[in-house]
Length: 171
Image (tube, rainbow, N blue to C red):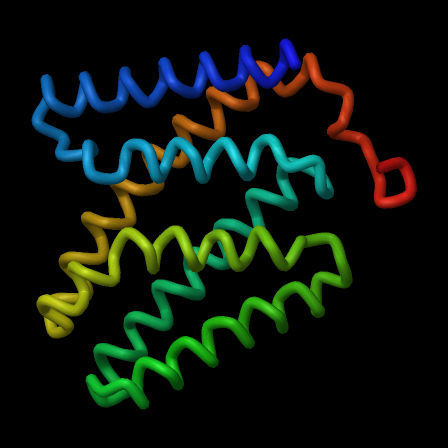
């Protein structure tokens, strides 16, 4: 219980610092501060595989989602059918990466990476699909920064918790 409270306090403090520094420096991180911090904390706190493998899965899923947006902008029609094809391809690409990694990279972390970008970028993308390259770079950098802050904040307390080394059998 103490570890959860400390993690929550540190994460909340990190989110507040992101919002305050963003407002002070004009970084425009406010819209994704909580989303990014929470997602980063999830990747840090879930006791499944090692942290580098969870991060690798998250990053790969993030990139897969970005490629999905590029495919939508460049190759697919802007219809529900085009969006459905892109969604299918993105999820299948995540499944293939997890399968090729033979269990070292968890599927959930790949899917979380795709959900992170999709959840924060879909509205911006749908307003101007032809501007995907420019608008996605802004979305990617702001989201990845806040995810990094959340991961770091949760990782600072994580060593106090002994569940990192837990395996399926030990849970």
